[in-house]
Amino acid sequence: MVISHNADIDGIGCAALLQMRYKIKDSDIFLIDYSIEALQGVEKAIKRMKPKDVDLFITDLAANDQKVGLFLSIIKTIKKGGGKVRWFDHHPWSEQAVKRITPECERIICGERNECATEITSRELGLEGKFVGRFTRICHYSDFNLKPKDSKSRSLIKTYAIGITKYNIDPRPSADKNLKALARTLAGGELSNPDIVHAAREFDRISKARIGEMKKELVPIGSKIAVGFARTLNSTNACYHIIKKSGRDIGIFVNLDAKRCNIRSVKSNINPLAASLGGGGHPHASGFSFDPKKYPVNTQKGRVLLLKRIERAAKSNGIL
Image (cartoon, rainbow, N blue to C red; front, side, top):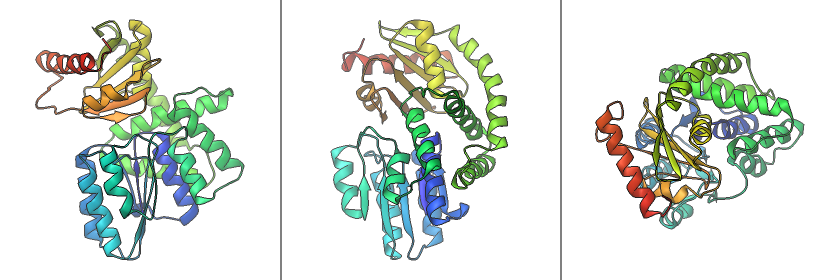
């Protein structure tokens, strides 16, 4: 059984490699975002399944303090049925989360490191070969926002990023079906399928129009930060355009369709900023969620409230 991140190729890649190794059924794969609601859904589903002698792999997901209880509940259900838990992640964890989760896992790798979750998973599973080597390198470049030298890899990274974003804005049953189909393609040793290529092309056209509108109304916060508001976009691409247009070092993309903000930076360590806003991530790629009832960002009042919250967090972290 697998629980992995649904928003990028690193999380999907982990699920694919596990399918390659263990022939896992689609029904035993849960691809989720970082929200508490998504994790609660997985907890309920696994409890209903009452799994017996099942090994659970959790990949490309961090256990922050708010979610430790839910993860422990899932782990308890697995272990009660005689199963084991292995956790492969590369995001920063709090000391409390590490302390509470580690004793419950058969094997755990967590904390900030210079390898993506797919690389960790391939190594831990003992998977080798030309395809695995190339695919894990692509995942590394993608997850750390690096540019490979060869054009085919760059094209694949763009296709994954935009196509997966498109899948995730579709209705949930369709999104899950498409994401799992991509994982099966990768598990079969193919780097892409026609569906994700089509989805990427379709959403690329939509994205260009949304980015153009977003760039017209960027909001500066101090001398280092600029904020943009738009409907769903690939987060890294959106932040890149915010940074390039504003000339700031830190770009924050506010997704008007979802209760989430993404943060990217060229030079600054933005993880403390994201953490102070209730989120987390990597030094140059982080994010945080917000309550849409408290911050209704589709209204001017809601945007002002959220901008003030970001400004306070930036001041407390000394990055204005």
